[in-house]
Image (cartoon, rainbow, N blue to C red):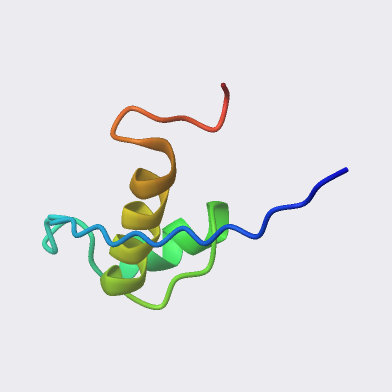
Length: 63
């Protein structure tokens, strides 16, 4: 069987808007209890951007 080494490079840029009057420190603490550990809204925005780049705007984990 023949094998191929392939490199894929990609760069995406997203604007993630969050209302910090709603998504405050208490919101972050409550979120961490249920979902995953984030330190701040920047970390949450990075996670959203990664998800969007992998699965698209309407992507879900259940495909």
